[in-house]
Length: 64
Image (tube, rainbow, N blue to C red; front, side, top):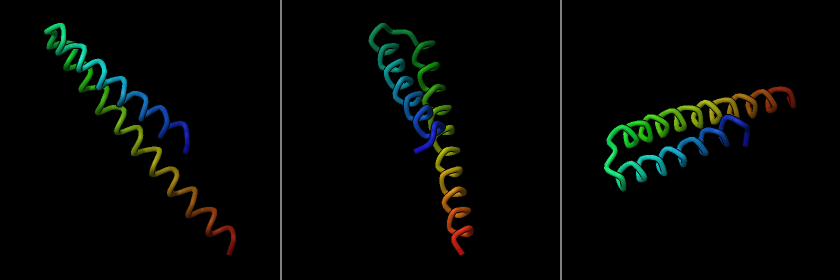
């Protein structure tokens, strides 16, 4: 795992917590911020996945 995958996952989880907290207190603003953090986290995680795949391919190419 790389830092983008880890940080993205943490941001996604934090966003879910923020969204649920917003629901509990009735704050649509906090719910929206939580959803935005989830999207940002998932995007960062996917970027990390892509970097990981690229590094794997480069490693495979260097072994040949």
